[in-house]
Amino acid sequence: MAKYIVGLTGGVASGKTAVSRLFEARGVTVADADIAARDAVALGSEGLAEVVASFGTGVLAADGTLDRPAMRQRVFADDTARLRLEAIVHPRVRALLRAQCDAAPGPYAIAAIPLLAEAQAAGGGSAREVYPWLHRVLVIDVPVALQRARLLARDGIDEVLADRMIAAQATRQQRLAIADDVIVNDGPLEALDAQVAEFDARYRLLAG
Image (cartoon, rainbow, N blue to C red; front, top):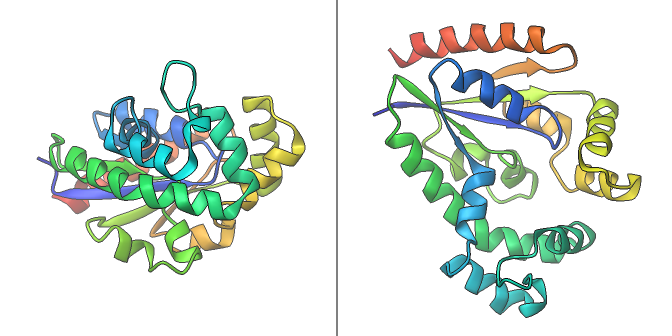
């Protein structure tokens, strides 16, 4: 069981998935908050029932699952709706991540948490208070202009929604403020892999 847990975070389209895969290739367990968030509102779950009670049946797809594109459009256009959804989903996500990391083999595990800085940004307590079981925080940093360009290319959305998605998250400066370590992801994959290799070696030493 892993006794050392690293929180991995970064803004939308910063490269969290690429970094996670590089850690996984080195045998590190990565508990993904995005996957945990889907599990938290899966068909038949208490989380989905609470979402429907709060937002109505209009947020459901024809098969009874959460209509994610419609919900995304709604919450990124309405801060109040976004906070309501987060209040339902986030506590369930934290519990799932902690259980997965605690059960992970190897000296350390990673909890990939896109919104790690947001609790502090929203005045809801520091990231360390919300996730007291994290031993270290690794932030993936990318210039906002590059983040925006990657988001447009990846999701095929318009510029207005892209800007809303970036603005709804913590700022680059707020993420860097909670960082113990930083990966700068503004270059080729080879440069990213070299940085991951360095941090993997560091975390194995710290965990030991």
